[in-house]
Amino acid sequence: MINHPDIDFLVEEHYNRICTKLVKPSQGRFYYSTSVYEKLNKKLTKYNGTIYYDLFYYLFENHDKIIKNKVHDLEKHIYKLKDIISTNNIVFKVINPVDGKLIYNDIYKDIEDSFDYEAYSASEKPYKLMLALGVDVCPYCNRQYVNTFICPDGKTRATLDHFYSKSEYPYLALSFYNLIPSCYSCNSSLKGRIPFTFNKNINPYHSSFENIVSFTINYKKIGDSKKYISEFYNDAAFMNIDFKSLVHKNRNDYKKAERNIKVFKLKELYNLHKDIVLRVIQQDVIYNKAGYAKTIKDKYPKIFNDEEEVLKTLIGYHSNHLEFNKSPFSRLLRDISDELDLKNKLS
Image 1: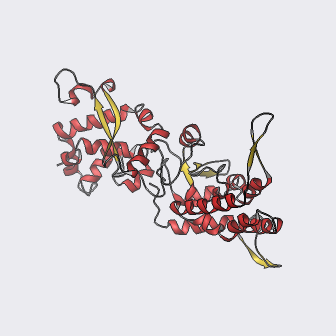
Image 2 (image 1 turned 45 degrees about the vertical axis):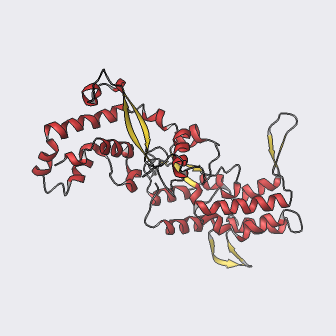
Image 3 (image 1 turned 30 degrees about the vertical axis):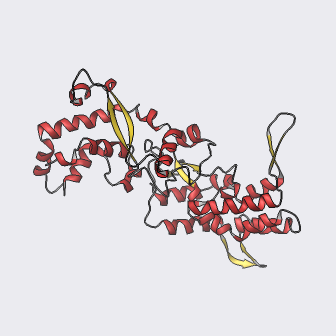
């Protein structure tokens, strides 16, 4: 889950970057001509007296809310705009009879121009947002780093996934809670244009898998053996990484988690990392049989304040789910460690 103590401040900063006010207002203008506000204001004049006026009037009057509203409120704008579009018989795209491709008309392009994501993406603005947000690991998969880095001769940042597709909802292209910092695999290779909604999918700004599903180990038994460690702590072929439900499977939050797991191929991808689980299982042997954890805690009382810090150091994860965006595989390591009951074996 993307969690920042000053998230409301970051939202305001984001809005001010794309609706930057003039230092010295002139001739009734308060914003730069490139701002969303100013662009929509011009569109109102352009479409005055046409069937498209209500559409642009709503966008103009609510542009700040569209940019700043939380994800569950974005759907309210979607429903309202769908109603305006339907009532006025507005069409955005038609199929080219020659090649069968979609053609977007000028109305669509004017909305796209007003909420110009391409210009935003090509600027320094998303880098500033990513640096302030401090998301270092993809919140969709928790597998890959998405650090933001800027230097005089190079820079890199997370890709920004549009939770609600910007091709379907161009007016949400710059909405803060619609921009999910993510890795290229999750954004482009896996999700692509698969439609996501708040009611059917987990939005990392709103929730996570926490208390809904957790990672678990499924393993093949040899004969009547019940002690899995002796079977596969050195052989990944004996086990699979899977998810187990922590709630009733009829619950909507479980179904949302299940859809995300399917779209982002989390079962398949995490089974490419069985070596990580094997190392945790080896730690289980150390905790349970060799007693090294207690030795470390007792030997270095000034370094480790509590058992949780020993666990974090030896296993290598953030136990607090709000810190999972700091290290890859944190959720996997935490869940498997809990399943093995490593925390209670520290003392």
